[in-house]
Image 1: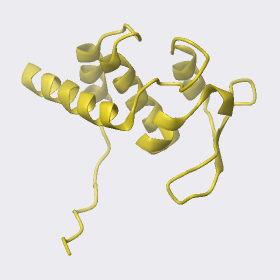
Image 2: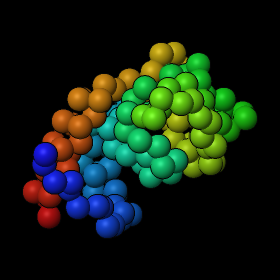
Image 3: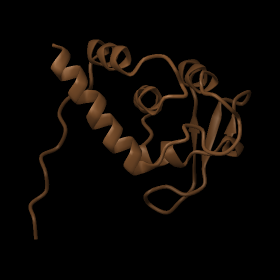
Amino acid sequence: KPSKPPPRDRRVSADEVAILMDKAGLDMRRVSCRVVHALRFAIETAMRAGEIVNMDWDDVDLEGRVAHLPKTKNGYSRYVPLSKSAIDLLEELPGREGKCFNLGSDQLSAMFRKVRLAAIMRT
């Protein structure tokens, strides 16, 4: 059985997020932009990547500032309170039907690695 990976011991910095945002651009129609937007949303809400990509607009109450996650990693549903910043991030997304971020898990992972590599090459 493989050994467990070491625990993460740091958070992404504001400067790192700014560099990623610069590389991804501002056009929410682009996958790279939505991926970095999802990262910012994850930082704000502490939601897992799978929870974010599976979040449906029908489960988001913008006025009540809460997202209902009908199925989480542990198999239970839960409610996630949404800060003003989290609401602002959601309101920047195009459309109000289907999946909020319009990303698949594999797409999120692959595109994040691509944007991260482009940001690293920039410095």
